[in-house]
Image 1 (spheres, rainbow, N blue to C red):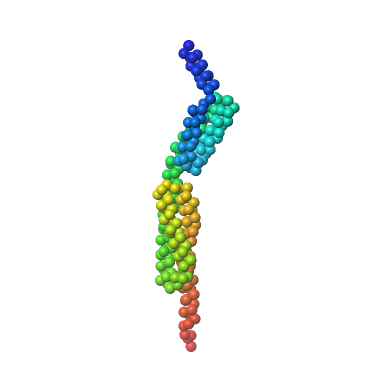
Image 2: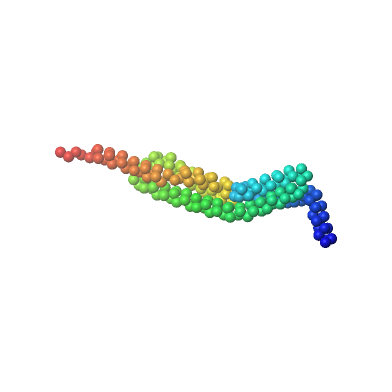
Length: 198
């Protein structure tokens, strides 16, 4: 019985002490979560961790040490879960980025084939210059995206790939349209130049 009373007294005394160590530990855990990108990949849990940490600090100021300890523990736990969720979310984002890279490359290959068909049909290279410049720009930026992805800069790569997809998607059709219009124009001219039948 004495042990139970002593334990209860020690617990009560602990609640009378400011939980500075626990708050510091929670701060470190939240910082770790921020460093691995939890704000982007586990935003709900990261927000919970930051809110709980702010509450712990406020309760510490208000000398509500029991409440501060509880909030600090909540912050540390939410940050831990945020870190756990970030790994799989990053892997999913990386897979999506690699898929987008493959799609942009495939579209560039189609554009190259359509360009070759246009040149073969006689479309002047000068007429294709703007499209060529667009394709070269996409190709160069794609190489940069691949390099940045290799370095792990998903935050930079994701929006860039979205832009590249938008820019490259119409390119094969634009080359095809240039060829079709050129052929139609020269077919009409050919018909006009043919000798008339008596």
